[in-house]
Length: 241
Image 1 (cartoon, rainbow, N blue to C red):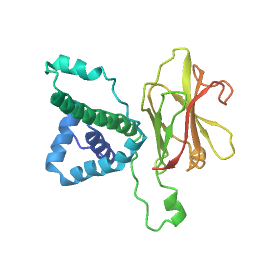
Image 2 (image 1 turned 60 degrees about the vertical axis):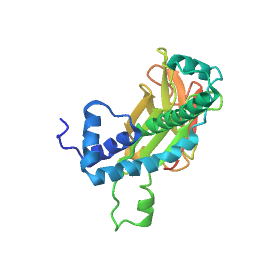
Image 3 (image 1 turned 90 degrees about the vertical axis):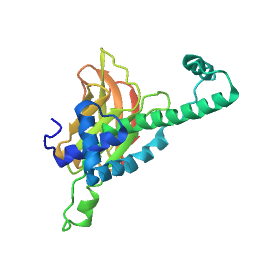
Image 4 (image 1 turned 120 degrees about the vertical axis):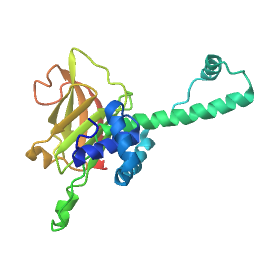
């Protein structure tokens, strides 16, 4: 299976997933094989690591409770010595940072952009229109955070929750775009913590930098009015990725 040819887009996505360390099974075996034998694949992995690393700035550090250190020492049978506690603290701090990075980048993975080449003969305005967009959706009153990413070339939108997204069997989460005219347009309901959609051409023309994305709680199946009827639990503006 690992010898099955893959498209450039699949190869790019595989490199991103390998950079994040979220692969397993055959996909992980294929990525390791490519990384060992293909310098260009290794370069793609490095490119994704550099591209997604700035998203770590959006992850707030969380200190573990003081009781965690004695509990860890007891679990591993380590004597309660000051030098060992300091060493363990450093190691756990390192892993906490790695875990926080994985959370942010895994969310970004669900919104990976497949870059499309732009013809050199295209006018400057057309080139600018192909710049990928991203938005971090959140709310000061809630822990819910989502990452949205949009590729204008394919009109593909991807959204993923970076934190727990509680399922409610009686309600649905509906995503909206709010352009300059202030009138919300539904982008569909999220069936789970991840959502992928290809925007219609007319809607894609309004999907640009500065547009607000919002997530509301609606009845099952979505809003019956075509406008948000429930509380907005997360929102954010599209910016250049």
